[in-house]
Amino acid sequence: MKHLKSISLLLVMATIAASCGNSNHSALEKKKEELVKLKEERKTINTKISKLEIEITKLDSSATNHSKGKLVAIKSIELQPFTNYIEIMGKIDAEQNTNVSTEIPGTVKRISVQPGQSVSVGQTLGEIDNTVSEIAMNELKQQIEFAKTIYEKQKNLWEQKIGSEVQYLTAKNNFEALQKKLATMNQQLGMARIKSPITGIVDEVFAKVGQTVAPGVPCFRIVNSNKLKIKANVAESYAGKIKSGNKVKLFFPDLNLETEGIVSYTSRIIDPINRAFNVEIPLSSNSDYKPNMMAQIKIVDYETDKAIVVPVNTIRTVGEDNYIIIAIEQNGAMHAVKRKVTTSRTYNGQTEITSGLIVGDRLITVGYQDLEDGDEIKF
Image (cartoon, rainbow, N blue to C red; front, side):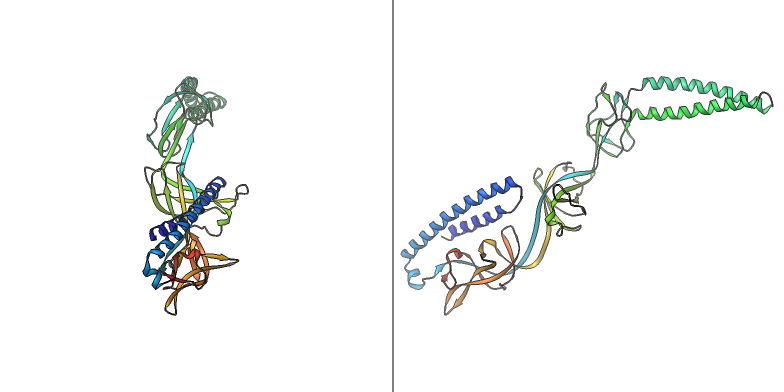
């Protein structure tokens, strides 16, 4: 019989646990259906328990002779730690995660890296075919050599007071103008090389040799996995509870990994569309973490080392008042007594009691459903 009552307790706690979680509409409907099903099962089990109690009472002469009290189970109240969490979903984001494109349009001539390769800032990832510019560069260099020769001769003549100043200045101007043009062309040729803007890993190569590309079209994706964080949206109703420094428990379903962290950032603006704000949680280095990987986040918004905690299903609500049933000895027998309590937060099927109970009180945890104030009990 105690085994069946333990099952009943577990089913009740599972019911409450099922009521927590994502407020998503579809998930809520699913949990409501599960709750209805569990309540039906509990009703069936309670009926079987009552039937067995009657049958045992008839067969157990000692029970009949010594006590008429209803059979219950009790738990002595003790102080214990209690933590309340806000549960949300988030995903891993890389602080340095960038798509790299070319600065000029053209045809891809060379791919210099492959996925998984480490690269540094400024390293060439690929090159655009720039044959025309290279030919123009060679012609310009020849023009510069010629202009330099003319300039040097005109300079020597001018220093000897031969020739006009205009000839000397014209030669000098032509030489310097071609040098500036060379510098500009070198810069343009450099734009034909696609370079990495960050240090990281080549996550993906989009471009192919012979493919025509243009500015703004991704050619490579570079990710720095050394600086990862979790980003999540939190409902506006929690704006006053979540702050930088809150402790966090993280669980990664894909890795079956649980770890801890700290909220490092909360946005100061509520999104007017989804009525939520952003939070960020830095991650320690782990090669298994992947950008966009989902994570279950439990943010601590309240915790204490000494709390009086009871199963939420043992609390009865009448109007605006909450009650629990405790066991008290009266006139040599044990009786069920209704006690008004003040409740605080509830998490994972457990509710903190802030007044109405003291350490040492005996809470009735099984069999309380059929008790009235003053009923004689046994355990």
